[in-house]
Amino acid sequence: MADGRFQKGVLTMDILPAIDLRHGKCVRLLQGDYDRQIDYNNDPVDQAEQFARAGARWLHVVDLDGARQGVHYNLQALQAIRAASDLNIQIGGGIRSEQSVKKLLDIGVSRVIVGTRALEDLQWFEKLVHDYPNQIVLG
Image 1 (cartoon, rainbow, N blue to C red):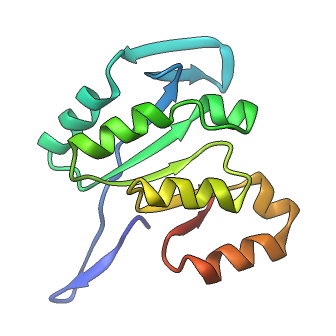
Image 2 (image 1 turned 120 degrees about the vertical axis):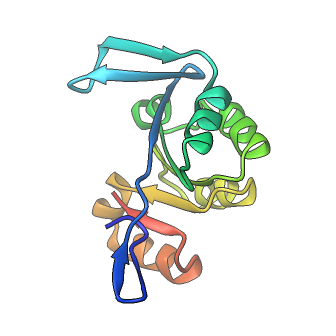
């Protein structure tokens, strides 16, 4: 459950709206196919602000270019969202080094999602979880 907590005996949760970034734009891939893309918004800051106005506290971001190439292609868009918004941000997509994790946390991301590398190198993942408590998510 995303950020669940108890308040007066009632379990609550946050719903995390998502932005998938490709070439700096908000998109969706049909069945994960990079050749079948739907464009939603050319301005990810505008999209994040829409989510915030609707009451979101968190934003889930996937760097599709990063996931494909293993390099942060959409860092500028992420920094712009961070600068314009009070949303807590979690990001995934191509994060395969501690240097990448640190860079993302340093620009103000709340949580970093790691996947492939964590499955390939459990010791690396355990070190991240230890070194960055409550800031690492396994995806």
